[in-house]
Length: 378
Image 1: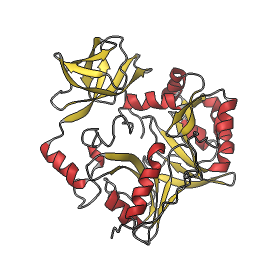
Image 2: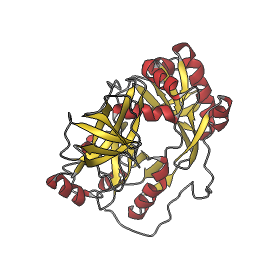
Image 3: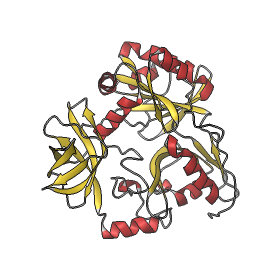
């Protein structure tokens, strides 16, 4: 059913210049004295009151993130589900309408174009949430491959995404009569003061939480309401700095570092999101061949035994020989030690002690299985 044709991808970001785009909540972030950084072509809040403070709020109470830089691609038309299933790695036949699925867009070499979440509304409608930097490329590839009856539309600027994450997330939302309690990786539609929202039981922190899909222009109203509702529960606005330390503690991969066109799903600990039974998807032959041969390198967790903090790009050694490289590394606010993910030679097993080259000095780290802290998303 997949046919290639010359069709222009309806990309809402096509007119954006080299200057970073700004989210609908930019003025709110300014009022909260946020420090900004560029993420995937967007000027987003890095932190407000400090990364460690915001990290602790999510682990212990509740935090509110603006992640509106994430892409939004709506796929509609007869056979939309079947078409997307023929492209992406995971098996959409395993979920029902109202459920979401983590999946990967690969190229024919088995490299990862992007990792994303697919929200299934019906056999004729899905919403894909790719990473900001890769949204246009995923949309372009899907558009070129789509049959005439399937439409791929970029809705990047039509929706904001607000993430409410932490043990008190349910209390914050239920106080606003926003539905909570549905299963992990599912979503429901709701109405908040005449604002239509989609409430998704998803997140990138390892804590129980929700991500709200909100009309772009209504995002400030919903943001204000969430902060007001969460004040008695200790809510804090949180930036993408804390999001990075939280996801690293869970061992969640970040595309561009832990997954990429050079790091396959099997190497990057995402093989669980690759169907072993589907007859076709982009990159299938290369991934099947790598699975049969065994990947030559694998993403592992590393945990400092001293005071060192790993950073991406640092070399990893074992018995004096180079065996890999750090792909993600940070100070863990929960454990108070340095942790990271490293792409290591496949024969470097969990339990090994390796060295990480930090400014010319080899610092000791244990190779471990992530997550580094207990996950509580259910």
